[in-house]
Amino acid sequence: MSSSKEPLENIEIVGSTEIPEPALGAFFVQMYPDRAEFLKRHWRWLYRIDEFPDLEPPLVAVLDDQVIGHVAQIPVFIRRGNRQVLAAWGVDGGVLNRYRGSGIGWKLMELWSRRYSVGMGFCTEALFRILLKQGWSPRTTTNYLHLPLKPHHHPKFQRRVPAIPAQLGGTIWSLVERLIITLRTAGWPPLRQVSLSSQRVEQWPILRHPGGWKAPLHVARSADFLQWRLLNSPFRGQYQILEMEDASVSAVVRLFQIGDLKRARIISISGTASSRGTIYRFFGSLASWAMKHDVDILSMVSSDPDVVRWAHRWFPVRSPLRFACICNDPEGERIMQGEDHIWELMDYDLDFLIGFQRY
Image (cartoon, rainbow, N blue to C red; front, side, top):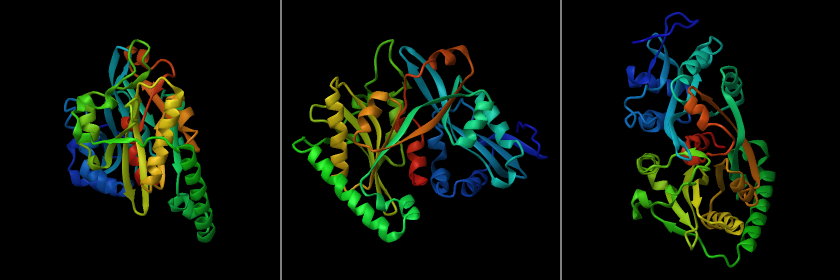
C-alpha cells in the first residue's frame, strides 16, 4: 500500500478499497453512528465506486489496522453551456475524536483536493475555515428552505421547548398554516403524480436543462446519472414525480418517515414555465399536496435565486448553506467562474445527511 507519513507514528493514508470492509464499517460506527448502517451497506453505491472504476477510491487514514480518518467523494460531471468537466463532491470527511489535532484531517483534505479538475462541498464552519486555508473559494448563494407543517413533531423543537407549550404552540401553528395554505390554493388543480417506472429515464422531465451558451453551472443530468441517483438508490421506492396539470413545471419528491417524523423533500425542480405566477402556484400546490399527505416538514435546497425567491413565499424558514470549491486546472477555473450555478438535493448527498441528522 502507498502511504503518507503523518505526525502520529505508523499512520498510512490509503484507498478505502485496499482495506477490509469490516475495518471501514467499524469507523462508520464510531464516526457516524446515526448513518453507520446506511454507509456500511451502501458506501460503494453512494461514492459511485463501480461506476467510475478508474478513479481513485475514497481516502482512509489507518493506524494499526484501524481506520481513524476518512474522506470520500461523489464524482459528477458539471456543465456550463457546452463545457463539461469531471468534478467531485467531497463527502463524509472526518477523523475520530481522539486523533483530532494531529494534522490527519488536514492531510486527508490536502491529498483529496488535488484529485479532480474541480472539488466541491457543503461543509460545517470548522471545515469551511480549513478549506479556505487550503485555497478553496467560498460561495454563499445556496439555501435550505423548509415548511414546518407540524413543528411540534420535530425533535429539535421538542428538545428546546417544554412538552405542553410545544404541543400547544405547534398545534396552533399547524392549524394556522394549514388554513393559510387552504385559502391561498383554493380552486387550484392538484398536482399530477407520475411514477418513476411509468416512463423511460430519457423521458423524465427532470432531464430538461437550461440550454445554450448562457446556461448556468449545474450537475449534468444524464440518463446514467439519474439511473444511479434514483433507480439504483436504496430509497427508490420513496421517490415520485409531481407535475402541474399542463406539465409546465415538475419536481422529483422524496416522501419518507424517520421515527414519528414524516418528511417530504423536493429533490429537483424543472420546467418550461415563463410565468412567475406559474412558479408561485407550483410551490403552493406542493404545500397543499404535503398537507393532504400528512407531512410534518416539507423542505428543499436551491441556489437558483428566482426559485428561492418564489419558494420562500411558501417556505418560511430559510438557512444559507456554506459551499466551497477548488479548481486544479484552467478548464475547471473557467467552468466555475461566476455565481450563476444551480445546486439541488438531487446533486449531492445532503438528502441523506439531512435525514439522519434530523435537520
